[in-house]
Image (cartoon, rainbow, N blue to C red):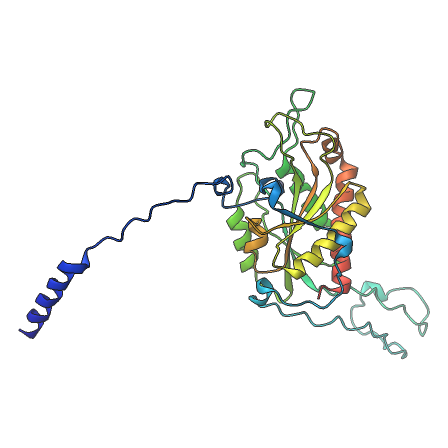
Length: 327
Ligand SMILES: [Zn+2]
């Protein structure tokens, strides 16, 4: 009885106020060019030119104290334990080995002669999340047709080749990495998946994200080459990431030193940041290694030896950061 009474009251009030739809908000602001941009900014060529901020990598102190910016403060950014110094093996008479001898002790030297200590193996400091940029199914991200009428440069192929070369070298050095997109032909842009995989990857090591790309300058059409002055390498970082900026500085330094490409310095933008730099919960950078719609530069990007230099430069940067750390 009482319930019926309350229901009646409730129905009365809802008949007065309950079903009012909120007034639709008019949209007084005209749609700007920036609004038309995709929400998922993939690489340098998607960023409006007038929003790009350039920093000279030589001005970045890669050894200075790291003030946690918002991005890194939000994550479990535990510094790895410092690498302990290599303690020399105490000089004692080597014990007699009973049982199967390991091959390295089988030096054939007379007993009692000190055996050189085994080569110290690298103690991994970081987990390098290596991102190869684009997939084969992705539209664009390819050069105009070459003069032979059949050849093009495909960015997905280049990025993957460079990352493959980096991984091969890191295997030899004992540096830990995570191949973010080993999937080959079936993937397109895959941006959210790339970020998701890296973010969810479990590791005791601190993670660093490196996305490898080649660049494209603004051209009248997909079949136009850009002016020969648009060339060179640049490295991107998220504007709110001090650590990312330092890592970018180390990579840019090595890429320029090793390849001799024109130095376009470090880049960032506050307007519509690159998706992988913004959404990864770890320090992240993106390298843009030359312009594939520059007719001269793309010739280099197709060469095996030049690709190896680009990969070696990335490895040099990784090894420097493995050795010194980024704080
Ligand atoms: Zn790209």
